[in-house]
Image (cartoon, rainbow, N blue to C red; front, side, top):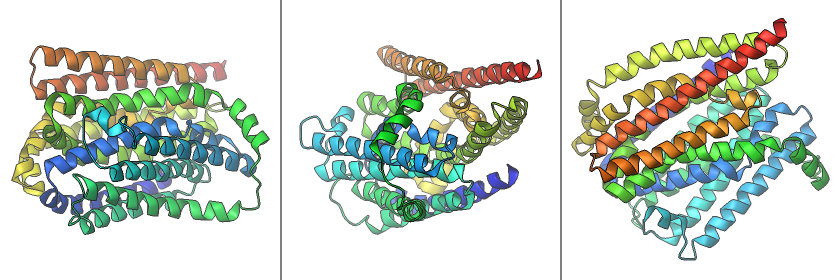
Length: 416
């Protein structure tokens, strides 16, 4: 596992370095309003992505027959395309998804959202296929390609002032498109002789019904609880201040996602293979990851708090110093997220999708009720972020404890 992790981490790290290298340029070209609208686009994209594939990508590593794998991938692709088409149609009506965030923008940005969703959905499904085949090098390269495609496109298109955030959005779509072509080309070429069979799709849908029935809702609530904060901040505090928060999340949250995501992908692949017959091995790996990530995360994120405003001002420009101050409100969340994210798919592996759904739903309700209540009490923006950090962090802790209890019980059953 260590070798595979290093391969994925290398690609993720290089991609992150590219993103960090271009970010100081972009923050001097684009305004907080631009980043605020871009955060709306990415928020909508992530929310739509959470359910548009029906979570069937999680079933891909569980299948050994390539014909079945292709049917699962095609089903996910069709589902994503259908959702993207609905988004495009809604953009022609007063019910454009951007209006949910109380943001006025052009129809072109709605079309870009639809196209970005198709690319992101296909990439998400194909990444699970690459994991199943243990093609970690290709998956690692895709992260670097996306970072380069995003950054260079956003820089090149910056002179085009069609609408707020347009350059950032279309650059993101271009990067995702290049990455999707890269990860899909070999699969399409190697499986072109395998027919698409509707009857086989229905059988697989029945076999893996828990993924669309429970995992989809769980993933949707999970994502909604992380993305809802953008909607609430925009409506309660405005687009500009959300732009500051967005940069904090992008600068700090992205490395967490890349590193934690790299470990999570491998952990999901390994634990899926060994859970039934060797739960002790999965439990050992589970605890080892938590121990390493908790110590590392605590040292890194607490140390950075002392210099965060200065670093943000130095790297991104003096106007972004406030983003560094906001970081201090989110330290608890970042530490816990860095600790638990690598093993966060454990309830999917163990078949406890309902438990995952409950945890995600609980977090969502807590965020909605809490943030609105604090606003009624005239609590500051930073105070709302402290509360958001605490609620999300506690939900991750509950998830981690739940996974440990399930693995411990499974390991004990094997011994008996």
